[in-house]
Length: 287
Image (cartoon, rainbow, N blue to C red):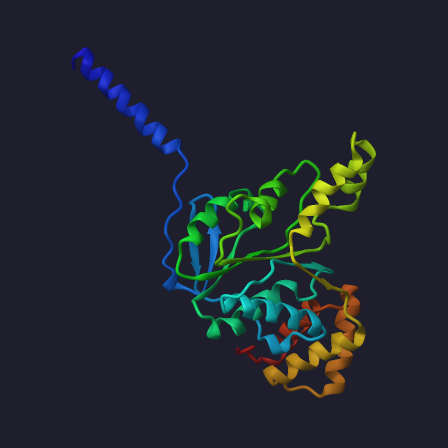
């Protein structure tokens, strides 16, 4: 091999290595393949979800106000009308993510364009710009969903999210609506905000930068712990829907005992009780 051939081979290897290291371009999605997708940041592609894990909207009890507001907002978006990004915040297990998935199912049939649900994981929020470029040119409308969104002290991922929600030059694509759930109203722990206030040269500005992230959501919907009445209403709704064969008085007694052993009452605890009860009765939880 001549000296020139060796140089050419080395250059080819270098070029191949650089190509492997370069960020891959987002792969176009086959939107007709599924109703829902999960964003794979590593592969820069949308993974289709064969079956969405959700329950019927009618079974979500005790959150009527939140349901009605989010459903109306989603229907507007599905019809091509202006709609707001929404932050669903509050206690764990109160139906925040279940509500988003259930409302997608209700709004989808009457949408003037295919309505898709796309989930992005909290740790992949930094790649949101790439995902939006992929969606912006698509012939669909997308509810972009991030479950359990929150940020910790040294986390700077909230900055690109702020830009995407409102502040960028391009703005949010017209065919995208962003729904997020969080246990925190301002998406950051209270001690983080208070620490910023005590150590910053301009404390008000430091606080404003972080708190303003939640302000970018046009809708704030609060979810609060279940009362005993709401908890038992949720349980009764599941029992009737799935036709579980047990006397109502016994169901109530055991549901309260189940909640007591877990130290909380919520829609999630009610569902866990129903799963246990149906297994004991040998009955399937058919859709």
